[in-house]
Image (cartoon, rainbow, N blue to C red; front, side, top):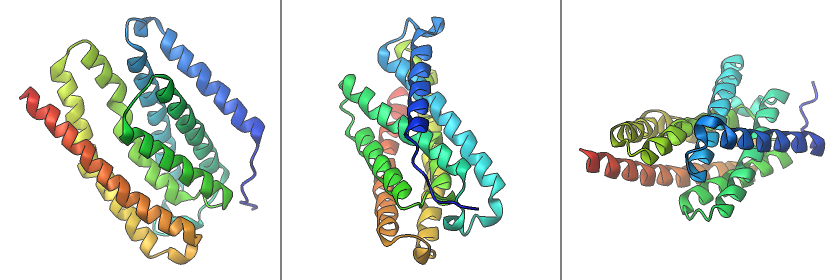
Length: 225
């Protein structure tokens, strides 16, 4: 089977249109009209991240026998997932700029992710490894509902969302990052050198971001107690 990635501008264009329509649907949904633009967008982001997590889990289950050798697993389903993810990231960055969002941490995360995905596609190196790392988007599943709780001044439920994010960082994201480092170190000959170093430094950098987010969660949780 030919696993060479082929760029299709029509495919990307269609995905962009679908996500743009979905944003409008979320914003115009009757139960969402009373909320701010930022809250609506956070709900959209949570739903997209749920989509990414579900498809990531499916791809991992279908290729679980290769979990320790993920760089050799390339297929159309993984490519398709990361086409969606790339369009999502680009829309996210544009939307944050339009809303004058000043969160440097999100910009750093998103721009780094765009660079990695684009380079990986260019080198025909989107693999099961990327799919495993994408599971970490599970942290964003409660971003939307947390924004709703905060806007409704429901501090107790907002605190629970922060606790969810805290546990995800500690018990899901951290093991996945460590697994990613382990896999990279023992598979350095199975990927382009530039990706090897980019993956390692990116994981270390995002581990630092996770600690920043963890401190923010703890600060909010402690202020509510």
